[in-house]
Amino acid sequence: MRLAVEMIRLARQDVYDIAYLLSSDTDLVAALEEVQSFSKSVQYVGIAKGQSFGLTKVADDVRLLRLDDIEQFFPQTLV
Image (cartoon, rainbow, N blue to C red; front, top):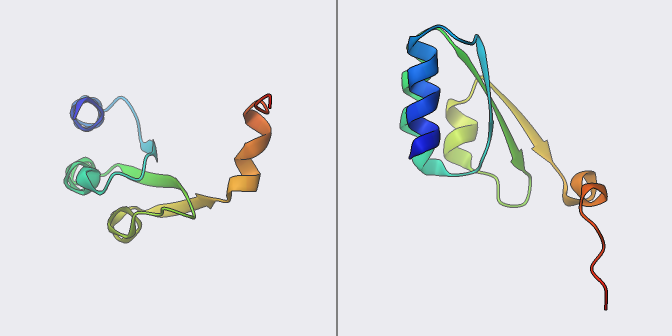
């Protein structure tokens, strides 16, 4: 909820032109639409496996990552 509120608040204050949303929570679709009503662009960045089709449909651009794109940023667990 807080993410949606801040995206809208900052769009209303004209703090940014492009929002990069790193979430696959379809509940954020309404917030994206509100942000776009302020002529802001929303880039949805998600993981291909688990992609939000709702966000994909609404966002101005979509960047989907594969798990092997991000595994390098997580330490290997010890067995």
